[in-house]
Amino acid sequence: MKNYYQPEIETMPLEELQALQSERLAAQVQHVYENVPFYRGKMDAAGIKPEDIKGIEDLHKLPFITKDDLRDQYPYGLLGVPLDQVVRIQSTSGTTGRRVVAFYTQDDINVWEDCCARALVAVGATKEDVCHVSYGYGLFTGGPGLNGGSHKVGCLTLPMSSGNTERQIQFMEDLGSTILCCTPSYASYLGETITEQGRKDNIKLKAGIFGAEPWTEEMRRDIEKTLGIKAYDIYGLTEISGPGVSFECQAQAGMHIQEDHFIPEIIDPDTGEVLPEGEVGELVFSCITKKAFPLLRYRTRDLCILTREQCSCGRTHVRMMKPKGRSDDMLIVKGVNVFPSQIETVLINKGYPANYLIIVDRVGTNDTMEVQVEMTAEMFSDSLKEVAAREKELVEAIKAMLGIKIKVKLVAPKTIARSEGKAKRVDDRRKLYD
Ligand code: DLL
Image 1: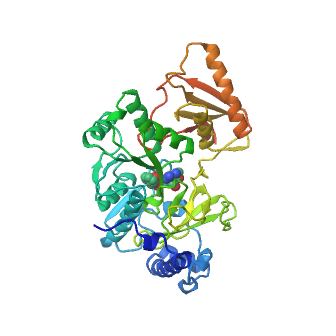
Image 2: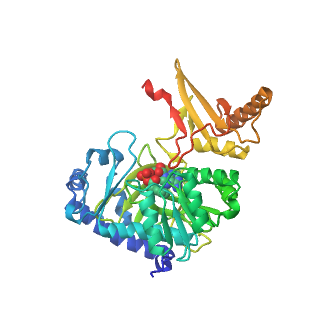
């Protein structure tokens, strides 16, 4: 069985890593120029020939690719190989506009599953483990990606998919699941249910790999406590392959980007200028090994920071800090930038569960924002005075965080819908009027 901790790559000195990236990038640029008319057109229009891109120092010369380009080229416009070499399609959830689809050759699937295998090994998975995959299967990449990685590591893999919480817990108990893979919001729900039903002692979980949506350090601590595990972050996006573009190691201090396959950049989202390490900006990825859907300089809209500070695990691959959220998920309320994660931090710090809904609306020309927050059973009270005092405390704590006064409404336990996949935290009703 192949060992999926690959120190020769994961701890490679920076110079060697950059030489590898440069070689792969130059070959990839040649590949897209020859095989994707859309890219050839874009490069020709910008006056760039493939020979101009000799290495990573020339990356900035290439034009960006955006989600709109993907939608315009739907379905086959960005395909880099003939259809007879494509073996798989995955897709984003596509709540607005056309779906975004991504294609894979068998080699691309191997790269993706290797990335997920590395992520699993980084949190301590071995072939002795029972890996419980509760991400959705199907077009969503979470289930298939972690499933493939788990097979490669040699774990006993439970392809549970999401939903049916009672069955999930029963299987965890019966089969002795040791690693859980799902969204952090579903992990939180599983933890809540297991605790309430007094079944924690029957659970053998030791680690969880949670991603696909933003989550805070506070939520991590909460999940670690309720499930009695170490909770690790994993990041990815369908367009670039799926989960495993980056993953946390046991240091839990940011996610290592698998730089032998993906070159990251951070740019100013307004000007497109490349920003220096340590500055917050939009994450951009170039895929240098995938052939069927070879995106270069793809703008993710995710906002985060990169660091090359030495990690205690010994890996040299750059780390990305938890994304603050997507630039298009950022709410502007009363002229102030608001990320749902800021609200979540306040709530968990004050002892509330991460079950909340932000409702933004407009009265006349004024924005309004209400946060509905679920109380725990212990907090729940019939005393209106007590509830009002709690609400006031939260209004003030949120004002200290955001600088604006919003409304808080405490609701009874279990009234906010639980999520089995990515949680919906925001209901922006202003869109109705735009
Ligand atoms: O969510 C892939 C994935 C599956 C990642 C399972 C991790 C685990 P998409 O559905 O295409 O793919 O959504 C990608 O989700 O651009 C981010 O905005 C967000 N996202 C993914 N992982 C994280 C994370 C999958 N760890 C979009 N933290 C990305 C914050 C995340 N946001």
